[in-house]
Amino acid sequence: MMMEKREEEMEVAAAAGVSPFFADQIGGIFDMAFDVRGADKSSQGFLELLGFHDLPGPLFDIPVPAPLVDAAPSVPPPESSEVLNFPATPNSSSISSSSTEAATDTADPAKPHPEEEELGKAKKTSGSKEGIKKKGQKRQREPRFAFKTKSEVDHLEDGYRWRKYGQKAVKNSPFPRSYYRCTNAACGVKKRVERSSEDPAVVVTTYEGQHNHPCPVVPRGGHPAPQPPLAAEPAPPPPGLGFVFPSFQAKDLHFPYFTSYLPPPLDFQHVSTGIVASAPGDRRPCNPTADIPMRDHGLLQDLIPSDIRKKEE
DNA sequence: CGAATTTGACCAGCGC
DNA sequence: GCGCTGGTCAAATTCG
Image (cartoon, rainbow, N blue to C red; front, side, top):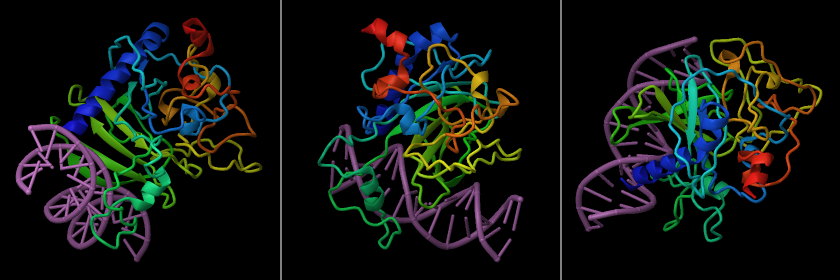
């Protein structure tokens, strides 16, 4: 319906914004964008939103021969941004992202804070744990962003543990949409996973909210991801999604045109082997790669490399 | 036995 | 107001 419409629009816009960079600069391997509406763009970069606060230099240098998921149009949508994304799970070969529903305007002073929303989240049945939403108050949404991944598995490993709490059939799609919530009781992050009706091989994952805790990082069915040496210096859980790259080494990854941000959540162990946190010390639990001094350009800094920004300026 | 998943029901929001 | 769809709950079921 309308939500669907909106989502479609967002996705299109996302795809549109991506291509120029990805298609030309990295062979069109990745094609993604994030919807960070609702986030404070002026003070919080996308990576920060994700939990990537201190990212190291050139991030990735992944020889990814995989095909791209989406073709890339050209005019970047005004409100969507693009960010790298990577194959995450075994079988995933390529990724693309798309912004999704507008995370409702957190800018609107009249509307409650995301946190408030959590509390006020309407629970139909009275006595809900989550509280009761005030009447007439629109449901507030956390900033969201989505990305597409060409993968055989629906649920991509991102280092966090998720509990599935629902599944719904999606209109105009033969594939159901699954709803997951972070298993950390204090963490309200959610994510939706669905397959693209257009390309069944493509999994669309939409994250909503930010993790407020360190990631458990214990990739399913595998060796625990090499955790950064945090023991001596436990990093506080970043107010971001805190996506994880359980087992990849930043130096092994390099994306010339996207050196100031990291891609979202994904398990790189199947993309690049032998990967380890690139540097000890100041590392967050879920983003072993981290150290890139980031200037505050708001969302822009996360999306467009400085040299590109200069050109555009 | 606890945790995770499945699944039907219910509610909110939106367009008509 | 009605119908449709997305999103969430929670009981039942399955899994480890």
